[in-house]
Length: 245
Image (tube, rainbow, N blue to C red; front, top):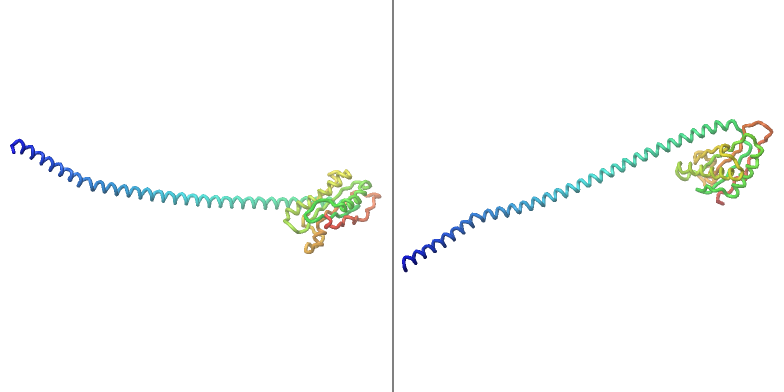
């Protein structure tokens, strides 16, 4: 082998040896870095998952708190409405007492000329033929009575709430007013209306017969003048059978 060939061979061998050594060195140096990077990637992924879990629990907690807050607010609002409704009922009751007191005081100046009672079916406010007959009989005395008024007391049985029965007694009285106004031209200022609801029963509410008697409107023709007008015998035709309604 010539010197030139030997030199070339040695150079190639050294280059190969140096190349292998460099690759091994690089591999030794980079492998830990790669492993560390992989570990960091795994930790990052785990941390991201943990953060998402914590965020989900936090959101669920916030929603639960919001739901409870809304429920508390609704209950508070309902309580406020109940209190307002109770106050309105109390005010209405006080108003009815005041009206009743003033009406009764005013009626003390009047004396009865004729009176009747009209009965109603359960939870009904319409006039039956017998009810109209009783009102017709009472209305026959109106034309001969000076300085008259007509006092109405609407009543109910004890079934149902107080507020509903006040309204029902008023509707029953209104049915009488409408009949007298339309058929006999009785002006509104001549009529005193008291809706008593279930506050003034004439009979016990413990029996069906007693409750039937309490579903009524008492009608009185009254005058404040002293003259030749003689009070008539109270009409009895208004005691109709409530079951006919």
